[in-house]
Every structure is written in structure tokens, then in C-alpha cells.
Image (cartoon, rainbow, N blue to C red; front, side, top):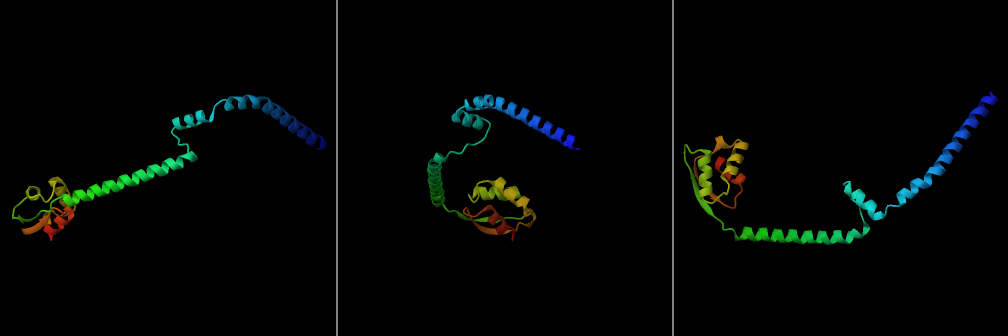
Length: 156
């Protein structure tokens, strides 16, 4: 038994020495090939593969761009509110008569300037199964109303 353990341990020692020598000989060749590429080349290669390389000095640029984005969003909101204020409020009485189709009702709403898109109105009414609930009568409608509000008003 003693000889078997000694032979086994001698085999392990020999294998470890062979692996160590091989690693020691091959290691400098592998290190020299990887150290030849610069950091910029490595970053470029990584970015070409679709990855993002975070650089600490980019924080200032990111903050500047976020500030510009906030300014642009504020300007856009101001322009939208100005356009809304400039839009003339139109209020009119719309008469829905017996036998009118949904297309005819949408055309009346477009003609009176209440809505811009008759197809959107028709789609909304059909998607919400309101086409059979449209009431006959006169309704006071405004161009500031949403399509959903108009549909609720004429179907109640």
C-alpha cells in the first residue's frame, strides 16, 4: 500500500511540474500579444461588437445633454400650450336625426369643426360598441372636447 501511495504522489508531482513549465514557457508569448493593443484599440473593438464603454469623464457631457433635453421639452410644452390657446374655441349645436349613419354623423362633426378626423371617431364608437346607442336630438358640442367625451354625450 505504501508503494502505491508513493507512486501516485510521484505521478502528481511530475504532472504539476510539466504543467508549470508549460505555463511558464507559454505565458510570456501570450502576454506580449495582448499588451500590444492599446486601451483605445480595445475600446474601439468592444464598441464595434455593440457594447457601451462607460467613461467617467462623460458625466459632464451627460449632464449637459440632460439639461438640453429638459430645455427642449420645456420649449415644446410651451409651444403646445400656445397652440392650444391660439386654437379658436368652436361651440355648435349638432342635430342627429333618425336614420343617420355613423359616417354621416362623423361628417357633420367634421364639417362643423368639432373633430378633425371622422375615421378616428367612427373607430372609437365601433371599438366601444356605442354605435347602437346613439341618441336622436340636438347636442351642444365643442372642438375642445375629446372624441370619447363626444361619444358619451351623444350615446347617453
